[in-house]
Image 1: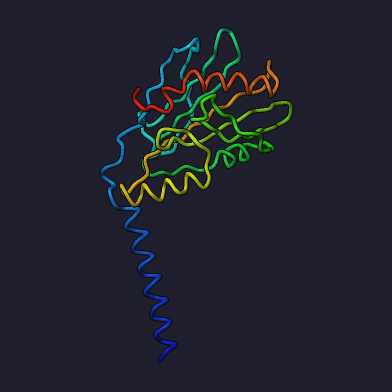
Image 2: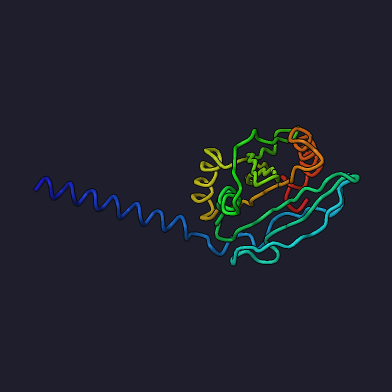
Length: 203
């Protein structure tokens, strides 16, 4: 009798856990942001941007992303991506870059002078080409890497709103004219100059 009662309690807990998970995933679906909550200028602080093309996931609409190449004062180009997924379907950049045949290693994070933007770093090598990749997520007025703070934020948002409001940010640069240290300085300058737009959606 006691054994049956324990099994029943375990079953009940599993059922409640499943129902809570479904509730948190489905509650408030209609309240999601309609498009990427970000407006990044084509020209700002000496940076000149130009759009370029890449294949996007099926659930990503034309107003859900910004994909541009930026260059400052005749310097090398860097690529910028801001992506809003309506179903919060983001996967680690390492999956894409490893899939293209690059050998990846983690490098120190890239951070703006104010500390409001912090991006995790990867370096990918394939043959003679080296690419630097920095990535993170906009949440609550700052951009941070994936990690514990992001998970805590997501849990709170699901409980409060029933959905997660965030967007993915990635900056990449192929090492050519600059070495890694110089490239980091160049990309940090981009973050400093664009920070007002990156952490203040619709600024």
